[in-house]
Image (cartoon, rainbow, N blue to C red):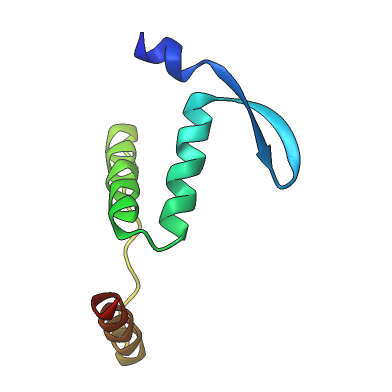
Length: 85
């Protein structure tokens, strides 16, 4: 039943154009958009989902580049702003 429900078609407006997509696609689009809007909980869910998909596909995750002092400063500033809000 879940698969059938996710495969149902719905009409959505994307970039001013009306399109017909599956509910599955709509869920993914909403998840990615919330993550891009700095919703940390959604971002974590998305990253965890991506890791699971990569693991099931046998893909090796990309190695993160070395962090520089500037990266640490930006991260600390971002975390401080999140805690303040």
